[in-house]
Image (cartoon, helix red, strand yellow):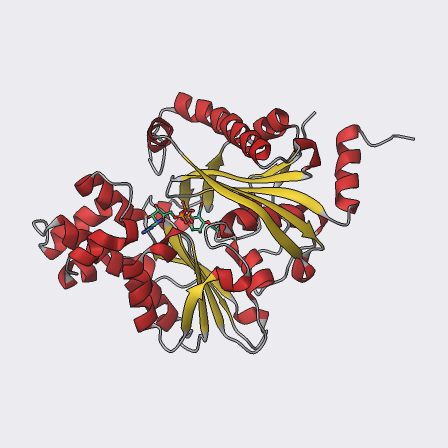
Length: 397
Ligand SMILES: Nc1ncnc2c1ncn2[C@@H]1O[C@H](COP(=O)(O)OP(=O)(O)OP(=O)(O)O)[C@@H](O)[C@H]1O
Ligand SMILES: CC(=O)N[C@H]1[C@@H]2OC[C@@H](O2)[C@@H](O)[C@@H]1O[C@H](C)C(=O)O
């Protein structure tokens, strides 16, 4: 009788454990660093129990960022560079994991699995590429085999392709975590992540899963960061000091809000492929605001993030939200949070600490959760969203 090879036996053993120790990895569109979350899971689906044991963001060095920027959101790239970085990012992420495990005094052999998002370098829903006959598409690099072999830990990666194969756009996958961690009977909630791109999940308190919406709303910090790099030689607008020193230019704001993305029906996704400095330049040209001071540009881009979120909430009948829980780096942007609080009152706005989830760690925890689901879960049926288990398995040996 054929026997399972050692990899499949290992998989079987992990899946049968009452608890699993997992590492979730997220490297987002802001390219600020690698988020590493060490979590313990038991159960699956709506009965998932999790504990965040350790979390860190390992900042990327400038030369690494520059390497990725050669590919990031670019229509034309050096194919050799793409090939090299796919392997390099996998090995590099493995090195960072081993370094952090050592620091945390955790033996790699005690970790059951790593769930790795990889680095998105291009996100192309049909709405963006507009090419007849081609599907929604997205590309994350940093191959899981390199992580598995270098760390010796089973690695689950490349979560977004299955979502597309099953009819989605490959994002936002936040849906599957937000429903599990954020739902509260009797309270209408919005979980809002403001990373490079902003996305939200609407969780109605009536428990009707057909009414749940999860969608990108537009830019989060991506344009603000790009303007800070260009005009102030700063990676981002720390504590929104620049935005608070500027004035919102209403003509520019209206031009920024004019893209058909904002009229398209949910669910929809986007990325820095659309919301780039070219997008800003076009809006400035159309609104005759090329000469406005850089701090006004940053203030207006910050107001753009706020307004696109507020319009999405209002256009999709979510005004009855009672609680809004923010995560992502944008939760630290006072300009954005203060304006959202005013515009979305009387909803109570705080961050995902309310759920016991560190707002910076939320997306890394999400991928750990998706890895746990890939091992022991069942597809979650949430309205018309793809009901699939995502992720590809890479074995260490
Ligand atoms: N103190 C702060 N003040 C203002 N903005 C901040 C602060 N700290 C972080 N940010 C913003 O948050 C960004 C990083 O956010 P985050 O790590 O959530 O993004 P990401 O995960 O890369 O994005 P995405 O979720 O789109 O993939 C920074 O680039 C910066 O714009
Ligand atoms: C293609 C891609 O990497 N998309 C990211 C990005 O960052 C925020 C937003 O755009 C979201 O759609 C998604 O990430 C999160 C983790 C998600 O899928 O929910």
